[in-house]
Image (cartoon, rainbow, N blue to C red):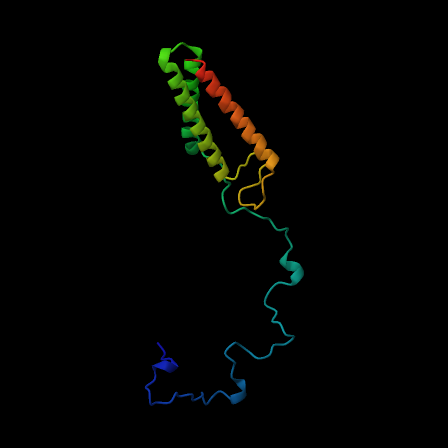
Length: 165
């Protein structure tokens, strides 16, 4: 390894002797030759040869989509919850029917929320709502419409379960 300027003794001077075979005017600057003929060296393709083929854009990241291992527990919980909600309503379960139906409604609602969060994480959105991370604001009429639909479904479900008693 070659010693740098800081590796010299404190009292010693840096030796900057030149090679006697090399004339003074022929030395290169640290960043290469000072001048080139025509300003540019001809070591690459011409500008019209550089883009002979059309450019092809390729997505390097895989597509964001829900996988089966993400969907299976959501679908399983939704099916279990809807069956727990439907069977006490269809068949007479006695006094425990209302409690089982409400538990099924709760499980179905949890599965629906879990599914919406998983879909939002991979980039899906509800119609009328902006894409995640886009910075756009939701239209208040769309938000009100979704809230009314959810409220109506919840009121009808609770009313139906309350009629079991």
